[in-house]
Image 1 (spheres, rainbow, N blue to C red):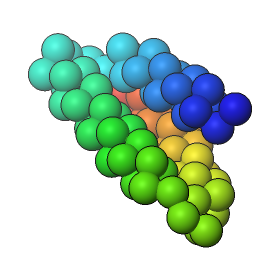
Image 2: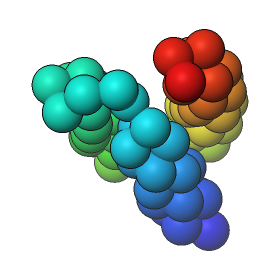
Image 3: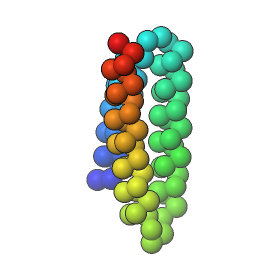
Image 4: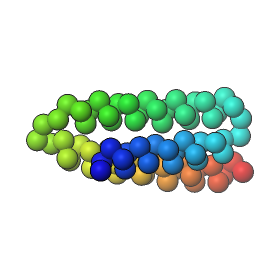
Length: 77
């Protein structure tokens, strides 16, 4: 379930990134989204007792970043 939610969050962020004004900005945003997704995936795969708290924090951080990205895209239109 967490993995599906994380993938959905990444897909949403990539969709929002399409609204960037030029190709260079879109590429930079996509690269940043993927870098963070990969980083969080590798951290979550380590397991351990705090895996659930790490995953919850990563999802919370991802939702916050998505909201910021959406607001930023609204400003550049």
